[in-house]
Amino acid sequence: MAKKEQNKNYKVIAENRRARYDYAIEDDLECGIILMGSEVKSLRTGQSNIAESYASVENGELWLTNAYIAPYDAGRTFGHEERRRRKLLVKQKELVRLWNATQREGMTIVPLVMYFNDRGLVKLKIATGKGKKNHDKRATEAKRDWGRQKQRLLRSNV
Image 1 (cartoon, rainbow, N blue to C red):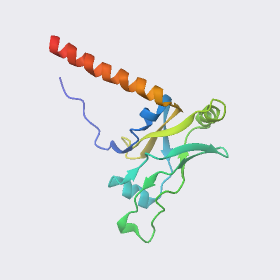
Image 2 (image 1 turned 45 degrees about the vertical axis):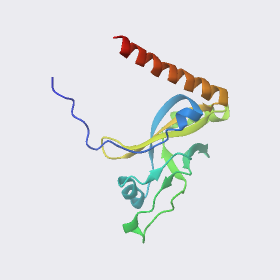
Image 3 (image 1 turned 180 degrees about the vertical axis):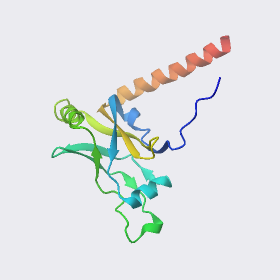
Image 4 (image 1 turned 30 degrees about the horizontal axis):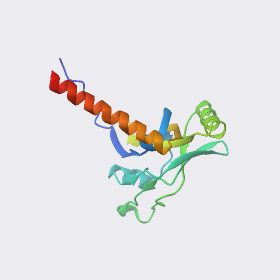
């Protein structure tokens, strides 16, 4: 059988691995992000961090706050602020759903992954989730450890 051709444009820029540990993720959504040219060039070199960032709905718009994109060295004249607020692009229906989740249900909008999609555009995968308590985190970790141990036992018995 022929191998499925991998897309050369798809590339993960930054991943928030701690989000799934700290939050019980309900559902996720892909959204666009408005960037300056120097930010895109800096992202192509892979210099960003979304670990401490979050998204919020303000005045009918979705904003990404505290995401770090390193300054682009060659673009010092027309540079950008590293931790400026960036507008996220979603449909109105999704924006209303996100607003309801945060205001009525007490959830948080957490960025999971920033990546270049198959067309080479920067996309951000965000998710709504509830914060986990310490006992929830321990239960998740115990469940994951038991899954690993079970796989080891099945491998050794086969």
